[in-house]
Length: 275
Image 1: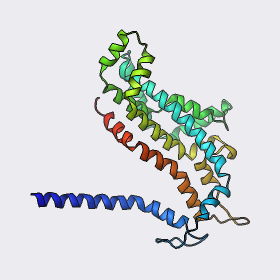
Image 2: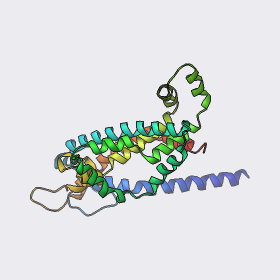
Image 3: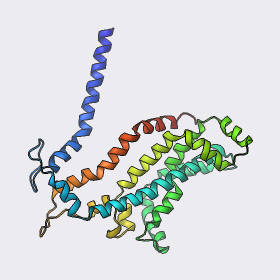
Image 4: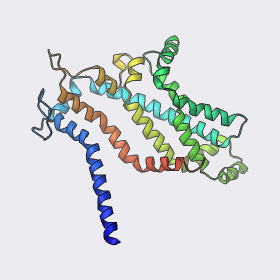
């Protein structure tokens, strides 16, 4: 029995190692080829270590200006969307107003609408409001929150004992104070999960900034997609420098994931504890 269990454990570890290698292979190839010489064919094994490609990734385009735009958009989106989605989720979890369940179903139904369906109407709306080439669309999107994150918050808040809020209400706490001083401090897993997922979505967004902003206000992901890394007097993209820039773009995503991975797992697991 012990031999059988040990063999099963080793098979399990081998499968995990194999899957890990599959997921890490694209990152490995990106790093190896980012360190290769310009215009060289793709390689599987390291050939050279041209670290200067990372320098060119930050100088051939206005890298830091676009990075600053990315930080601004991410800060707006994460701050507003995390807060507004939490408030809406708490309201759906605790306020038993007439029609609240039906309204919640409508909010969930919006997740089934493909984003591309609303892109043109949204562009027309902001164009009529003269908000094109500003960051105001992201402010309004952040205030509106996200249906998926509202759902996550609601499910998490339903798992919190109502007695905590009843005791605070007896002490004279308002609805908002109960949410801010009692509910949020014990909801760090779901708050961190929403913040990290929102940050990743904002940081990697290409289509939205391309539609609503001009080149000078592009975030880094959009700039890298629309502005090629070209050598002086050439029209051919320098693949090695583009790969180096892509690695730099991915660093904040990787860092935030490893910092908050425990909260992500806990937040998602506890989302479905109560219906």
